[in-house]
Amino acid sequence: MSLPPPDRADVIAMLAAFGDRSAGEVAEQIGSLELTWLITKVEQEYGTMLDLSDEDLAAMTTVTTAVAGIRAALAGAGHA
Image (cartoon, rainbow, N blue to C red; front, side):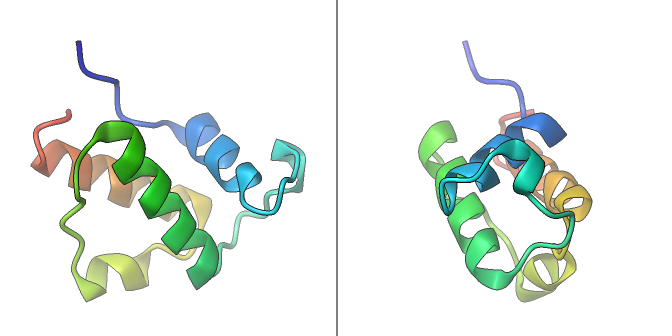
């Protein structure tokens, strides 16, 4: 059974682990280090490499856009 794609709460929980923060301390705006952390966590959890272009990465500047980008990348990798 495959994992469902991460939702907003999942992404916030993953980001909270970066810097050992509570979910409430995660800002909507995310930086490049947080994005790198998030992508690595998703790849580890789902056992896949996300095929993200520079444009995809540049668009992931908020929790909302990161959720959408990761879900789209996972769907493309067969984890829909």
